Length: 103
Image (cartoon, rainbow, N blue to C red):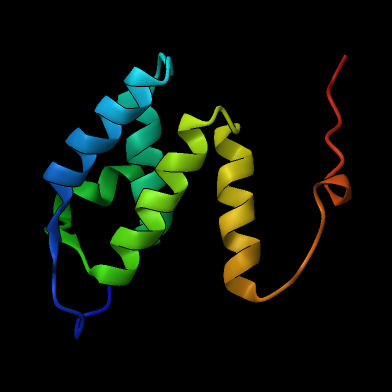
């Protein structure tokens, strides 16, 4: 969160909401996923979340969007990739991302 942005929501409150939303969608790792998404939005490690008081309006909106996508069962990694690419202004289709699995 930028220093000049006003905190509009409590991170603890947002994490409780996200955990409940994801659990309700059947995501077994709901708390872990919520923390990963919050860390991604804030640009910090998951361990550094304890130092964050809350999210500003833009961060909160991005977090809600990412949680909503994850609740639709979009894989966590894809959710984060989509958010990163969108923030860069680059356009791509999902067919652009080719995943390779080790055998």
